[in-house]
Length: 394
Image (cartoon, rainbow, N blue to C red):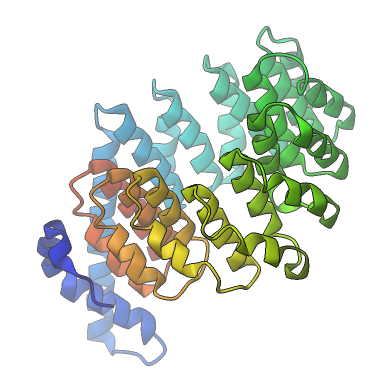
């Protein structure tokens, strides 16, 4: 694949430096079955080791940054790499003073080792941040290790309602089904943040009873609650919800339309395709994006041009969302479109594109990510390094 380097001068210098190296890697991936001979194989291994060393150096430097955002990016990228040699970085990240870094450490270490994730979650039960502690409780619940029940139960008496809610969710996940009522009670009591967290937990539980509670929120007077309930249901949508969803896509609130359309994409095409097609040209960009995603799920090629156009939207939030989606769905010229997004002037868009390229994987992804090791933003270099390490371990 040819990349228009003239669009972004930062690509040119690094591309020249790594052109030969990446060509060797790509050739070795594509032609691994044919064999090169011992000398070529040694050159390939040497090149891989050098790129791996550079990726590690980039992550170590980012992790040592005084900027909390950059450190958090390094921790998140280390988790995305799924590289066991980065376990020490993830463990150290769990002690960072910045809560987001600690959250990313917990999320990332699970991708490397379930046992280490459980140990870290137990450690983070003493964390002072409510979101970190809640995530730790949820992780222990998701471990399905019933020996941890005595560790969780004291948190049902915590002074913070968010912690009590997280403890109830953890206990439910550990088999204590009676605690579902503690979660559903939060749908009508407490502040709005607590309510949204309860909705999220019900979506994660995904049982028929839990989903029924979310469906009951479709008629809530607050559009935000309805939209969040739709989002929480996700792939757990059922055909019985079709009439409700067809009504909700008519909502004047774009967030409700957006999330209702996404759910229609999980239903049979015979039931939802005609409705979804109507929103390819919706006035709201996110609604058009959800229409394109759902049509892809329904094996329809309609709206694919809409997705292309959103990649050039004036709003960087739309461009970054569209780039992120590109990592999850297959469309013609996907890698070419992502290559263009890697040259976007907005760093959030480039970050989304880097992570999407990593999700796609393959030789072309390796080539694109290698170039992003030279991005002017340190956080993006870290994400590129983490995703490259992930590709190298496959």
